[in-house]
Length: 338
Image (cartoon, rainbow, N blue to C red; front, side):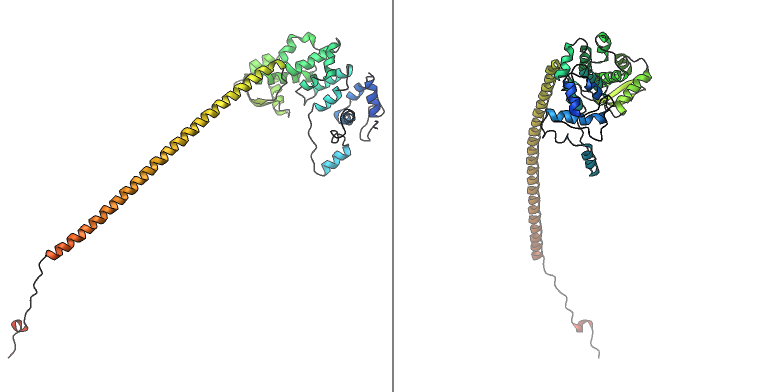
């Protein structure tokens, strides 16, 4: 399979030819891959697709084999480009890179601004083989340090690691802050400065601000300059050592047990609430029945009282003697005129 260089990709002067030729050279142990690694990411992506088309099936790589023209057409139609794992391109290269090319790849990964998890790359066979070569082993140890270690580990064992570039040093300090955030949510700036090897407050604050507000989203929190405290809400995750798994399992099991206890307590509260509700309803129904009975009794008594009053009134009228009327003759009061 041979792919020519697409028109939108310009190969560096050090190498001219097809991707298949470059691929053949570095498979034969040549250092042509080092030339390719000097390309910017926009120029390397087509070569990544070429490698992927060799080592994966056409079905899984159907999306990856899209050309830049296809991508631009998708953008024109309003489709958003898919966001992939930033480590993916380095994983593809690690399947083929060996020796010096693998070392160069490690350097690029450690300086990549978007990569903060390295366990997947450490598991690649070509990267693991670096520790078997005395010349390349320091870079494997350096990658292992970035995956699981902190800045203090680098200071204590600096002789076993190669020199760090300023970008690598900043990333290692950021990762150290992330590790400290897992154990405490409020970190004094004095403690943080001691752990990061920074004596200048300005440098420490600039490092924290870069981790928060430069789009990296490494940590989220608030820098309290007045009280000299870094308040952390959450931070990104780091690689997990195999020896840490039992502690993680124990923590999760404890959390599950706590959840079960809470659910049991909630069930008991629900049962108690339902019982209290039933008792309250029975008591309310009893009171309502009693009120209705009292109302009915009062109504009956009122009716009986009214009937008794009417009966007494009639009896009193019967017993009362009739009054005699006065009848006067006209002759008695009005004498006849003569």
